[in-house]
Length: 181
Image 1: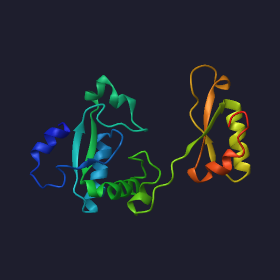
Image 2 (image 1 turned 180 degrees about the vertical axis):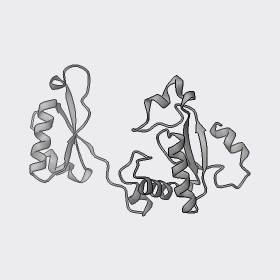
Image 3 (image 1 turned 45 degrees about the vertical axis):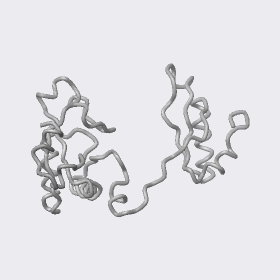
Image 4 (image 1 turned 120 degrees about the vertical axis):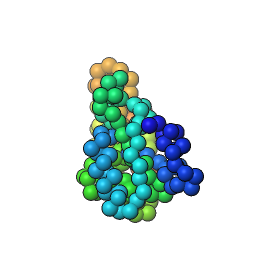
Protein backbone atom coordinates (compact mmCIF):
# COMPACT_ATOMS: atom_id res chain seq x y z
CA UNK A 1 0.00 0.00 0.00
CA UNK A 2 1.33 3.41 -0.88
CA UNK A 3 1.84 6.01 1.88
CA UNK A 4 -1.21 8.03 0.79
CA UNK A 5 -3.40 4.92 0.85
CA UNK A 6 -2.13 4.05 4.32
CA UNK A 7 -2.95 7.57 5.55
CA UNK A 8 -6.53 7.27 4.25
CA UNK A 9 -7.03 4.19 6.42
CA UNK A 10 -6.03 6.02 9.60
CA UNK A 11 -8.46 8.18 11.53
CA UNK A 12 -7.88 11.89 11.93
CA UNK A 13 -5.77 12.43 15.04
CA UNK A 14 -4.00 9.08 14.77
CA UNK A 15 -0.27 9.77 15.40
CA UNK A 16 0.66 7.53 12.47
CA UNK A 17 -1.48 9.48 10.00
CA UNK A 18 1.30 12.05 9.60
CA UNK A 19 4.02 9.67 10.76
CA UNK A 20 7.50 9.47 9.32
CA UNK A 21 9.37 6.54 7.86
CA UNK A 22 11.91 5.22 10.30
CA UNK A 23 14.49 3.88 7.86
CA UNK A 24 16.23 5.90 5.17
CA UNK A 25 16.84 2.72 3.23
CA UNK A 26 14.58 -0.01 1.98
CA UNK A 27 13.97 -2.90 4.38
CA UNK A 28 13.22 -6.56 3.86
CA UNK A 29 10.05 -7.75 5.62
CA UNK A 30 12.05 -9.65 8.26
CA UNK A 31 14.00 -6.48 9.12
CA UNK A 32 10.81 -4.41 9.33
CA UNK A 33 9.14 -7.02 11.57
CA UNK A 34 12.14 -7.16 13.93
CA UNK A 35 12.09 -3.35 14.18
CA UNK A 36 8.35 -3.55 14.88
CA UNK A 37 8.98 -5.97 17.75
CA UNK A 38 11.51 -3.59 19.31
CA UNK A 39 9.08 -0.68 19.00
CA UNK A 40 6.19 -2.70 20.45
CA UNK A 41 8.30 -3.53 23.52
CA UNK A 42 9.10 0.19 23.91
CA UNK A 43 5.39 1.15 23.57
CA UNK A 44 6.02 3.17 20.41
CA UNK A 45 3.15 3.13 17.91
CA UNK A 46 4.22 1.90 14.48
CA UNK A 47 2.90 0.63 11.19
CA UNK A 48 4.65 -1.55 8.61
CA UNK A 49 4.17 -0.21 5.11
CA UNK A 50 5.01 -1.68 1.75
CA UNK A 51 6.89 0.96 -0.25
CA UNK A 52 7.60 1.37 -3.91
CA UNK A 53 11.18 1.42 -5.19
CA UNK A 54 12.39 5.00 -5.11
CA UNK A 55 10.20 6.07 -2.15
CA UNK A 56 13.11 5.77 0.27
CA UNK A 57 16.73 6.61 -0.45
CA UNK A 58 19.75 6.19 1.74
CA UNK A 59 23.42 5.41 1.65
CA UNK A 60 22.97 1.71 2.37
CA UNK A 61 20.08 0.71 0.15
CA UNK A 62 19.93 -2.66 -1.57
CA UNK A 63 20.11 -2.07 -5.36
CA UNK A 64 18.07 -5.23 -5.95
CA UNK A 65 15.15 -3.70 -4.06
CA UNK A 66 15.32 -0.68 -6.38
CA UNK A 67 15.12 -2.86 -9.47
CA UNK A 68 12.14 -3.69 -11.65
CA UNK A 69 12.15 -7.12 -10.01
CA UNK A 70 11.41 -5.77 -6.53
CA UNK A 71 7.90 -7.23 -6.72
CA UNK A 72 9.63 -10.58 -6.21
CA UNK A 73 11.22 -9.25 -3.04
CA UNK A 74 9.04 -6.39 -1.76
CA UNK A 75 10.48 -3.42 0.11
CA UNK A 76 9.11 -2.27 3.44
CA UNK A 77 9.47 0.54 5.92
CA UNK A 78 8.27 1.26 9.42
CA UNK A 79 6.23 4.39 10.11
CA UNK A 80 6.26 5.96 13.57
CA UNK A 81 4.85 9.22 14.95
CA UNK A 82 7.05 12.16 13.95
CA UNK A 83 7.90 12.97 17.57
CA UNK A 84 9.23 9.43 18.12
CA UNK A 85 11.49 9.08 15.07
CA UNK A 86 14.84 9.75 16.76
CA UNK A 87 14.08 7.57 19.80
CA UNK A 88 12.67 4.76 17.66
CA UNK A 89 15.73 4.77 15.38
CA UNK A 90 18.10 4.71 18.32
CA UNK A 91 16.22 1.82 19.99
CA UNK A 92 16.03 -0.20 16.76
CA UNK A 93 19.71 0.32 15.96
CA UNK A 94 20.81 -0.56 19.48
CA UNK A 95 18.63 -3.67 19.76
CA UNK A 96 19.28 -5.03 16.27
CA UNK A 97 22.86 -3.81 15.78
CA UNK A 98 21.98 -2.48 12.34
CA UNK A 99 22.00 0.91 10.69
CA UNK A 100 18.54 2.09 9.63
CA UNK A 101 19.18 5.74 8.96
CA UNK A 102 22.69 6.01 7.56
CA UNK A 103 23.83 8.24 10.42
CA UNK A 104 26.47 7.50 12.99
CA UNK A 105 24.98 9.79 15.65
CA UNK A 106 21.40 8.55 15.99
CA UNK A 107 21.74 7.72 19.69
CA UNK A 108 23.20 11.15 20.45
CA UNK A 109 20.34 12.90 18.62
CA UNK A 110 17.75 10.79 20.47
CA UNK A 111 19.43 11.74 23.76
CA UNK A 112 19.13 15.43 22.86
CA UNK A 113 22.83 15.98 22.29
CA UNK A 114 23.76 18.51 19.60
CA UNK A 115 24.57 16.95 16.22
CA UNK A 116 28.18 16.58 15.20
CA UNK A 117 29.42 19.40 13.00
CA UNK A 118 29.50 18.71 9.28
CA UNK A 119 32.93 19.02 7.64
CA UNK A 120 33.36 21.96 5.27
CA UNK A 121 35.49 22.46 2.18
CA UNK A 122 38.95 23.82 2.86
CA UNK A 123 40.51 23.56 -0.62
CA UNK A 124 40.45 21.46 -3.78
CA UNK A 125 43.83 19.97 -4.72
CA UNK A 126 45.18 17.30 -7.04
CA UNK A 127 44.58 13.85 -5.50
CA UNK A 128 48.13 13.20 -4.21
CA UNK A 129 48.48 16.74 -2.82
CA UNK A 130 45.11 16.47 -1.07
CA UNK A 131 46.31 13.38 0.79
CA UNK A 132 49.61 15.10 1.66
CA UNK A 133 47.72 18.05 3.14
CA UNK A 134 45.40 15.78 5.15
CA UNK A 135 48.44 13.95 6.51
CA UNK A 136 50.10 17.25 7.50
CA UNK A 137 46.90 18.53 9.13
CA UNK A 138 46.65 15.29 11.11
CA UNK A 139 50.22 15.67 12.39
CA UNK A 140 49.23 19.10 13.70
CA UNK A 141 46.14 17.77 15.47
CA UNK A 142 43.57 18.96 12.93
CA UNK A 143 41.08 16.31 11.83
CA UNK A 144 40.72 16.37 8.05
CA UNK A 145 39.57 14.11 5.25
CA UNK A 146 39.81 13.81 1.50
CA UNK A 147 36.39 13.93 -0.15
CA UNK A 148 35.22 12.05 -3.22
CA UNK A 149 37.46 12.73 -6.23
CA UNK A 150 36.07 15.12 -8.84
CA UNK A 151 35.72 14.46 -12.55
CA UNK A 152 36.64 11.39 -14.55
CA UNK A 153 39.89 9.72 -15.48
CA UNK A 154 42.73 8.18 -13.57
CA UNK A 155 42.54 8.79 -9.84
CA UNK A 156 46.05 10.24 -9.64
CA UNK A 157 45.12 12.84 -12.27
CA UNK A 158 41.90 14.01 -10.60
CA UNK A 159 41.27 16.75 -8.06
CA UNK A 160 39.77 16.11 -4.64
CA UNK A 161 38.31 18.31 -1.90
CA UNK A 162 40.00 18.52 1.49
CA UNK A 163 37.43 18.74 4.28
CA UNK A 164 37.85 19.98 7.86
CA UNK A 165 35.53 20.77 10.75
CA UNK A 166 34.20 24.35 10.81
CA UNK A 167 36.09 25.13 14.03
CA UNK A 168 39.40 24.18 12.36
CA UNK A 169 39.07 26.11 9.09
CA UNK A 170 41.12 29.14 10.14
CA UNK A 171 44.00 27.10 11.58
CA UNK A 172 43.95 24.64 8.64
CA UNK A 173 43.91 27.45 6.05
CA UNK A 174 47.35 28.52 7.27
CA UNK A 175 48.74 25.18 6.07
CA UNK A 176 47.28 25.35 2.55
CA UNK A 177 49.99 25.88 -0.06
CA UNK A 178 50.02 29.58 -1.08
CA UNK A 179 49.32 28.84 -4.76
CA UNK A 180 46.15 26.97 -3.73
CA UNK A 181 44.77 29.40 -1.15
